[in-house]
Length: 610
Image (tube, rainbow, N blue to C red; front, top):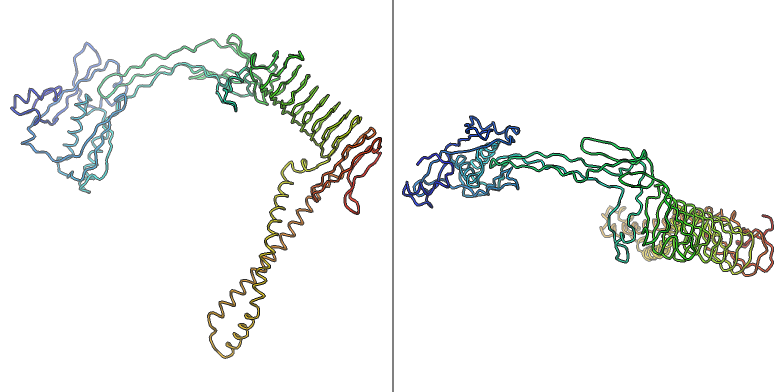
């Protein structure tokens, strides 16, 4: 029975009664597809002469477009009209139903027939129809791919793998873009510290630094989306973008504004920190705070290259300018007061007018401290008073030392009291000596090893020494084997000469034993050569170390005052690794002490000429 139908699946019950065939035995073929449309809600539907009209995206997206399909179908009794076996077909679609794909499963029983392609397309269309999709529209290349699959079946006589084919494609909506203000200069990342606390408990982003050229902020402009249309013919509308972040932002001349089609960028024209007051943004270099502590600011961390200067005005000696556990990292730090326990300062320039706690740490280039009791690592330090603190620097200037640990290239001390360890690579200079039990050490190892040369030499020397312990034993072992086999080898050599003279072919065993012996001698010679080579290399490395450390003879310990007793003078040599020491005597006058090479080794030279 051939019928015109809007939905053949809904007509099956009526056709069943008309044909007298139970519904479960009814199926149908789609013979023709009739597509009509209108772009005016009050108009009548117009037949589409060609389905290609819907391939035009602009036409397909017309908000007033309505599409209707009807079909000419032929119903038949599947018991009487037997169709060829078809592979299993599954239909799939994306979220918005703007793309339909069909997967044709592998099938060893499918056989090519002249009607296979038509039957397969009919099956796919029926699945689309049942799911409510329009059929025969926007299905470019679909039938070509089915035709190709049919050709492969005809050649291979089997569908040996699943084949997924795009049937039709609608138009996805383009979602609107809501406006947003992206703040790049603030770091809101929460990073846990060693004690499990959130880093934001300590560092609240009190100050946000930027470098010249940094992108500070970016305003993303709202952008209207475009609606789409799915393959059921339904329009997919989109909402208007939100503009909740639209605010009036003003900036100082220190910030450049670049406006584009989609955004507005705010770029730093100088290094510093971003200041915000009533939506007006500026970049400043100097900041004054009363104190840095957990209650008022939290830790303050910026880039060392940001040129930000922080002045901390707390000068009450009963309070801390930089509180316990606080971290301050910026270009320059100046504190009128004290630095508390476990505080850490990292900067190019640091000035502390108070005292540093024994468990505080400072890392900088140039440092000035009134009273230092903590740990300091810098290029150049100026310290009024050192009391038990540690200093690691290139050059250190100290007014008064009352115990401490100093390691530098040059150390300049006005007044030295007792119980200090002072190590330098070129100079220790003391104006007044008021105490005893000080250890004054010249050690050039640190300056020589700045690029790792000394460490590398020692590593090579250690490796060579280890090899030179084992190689002689291996050499002796091979020598013993050679000596024990020498007589038998000589006998074999003589016998081989006789056999050649008599024209007799030598036995293979004779030749093998002679060859093995020659190989053993070669190995022995190679080991001997290796020992000699490594001994020469070791000697060269030692000579290089001696040459490198020759600068120790230019190093001096200067005391412009009289010596007190029991101050230890020490010069540490790298190669040979020995210490040359001297203990000073009460009222001894020896203003300059240096190292010299004597007949019986090294000794300390004492002189009154500065």
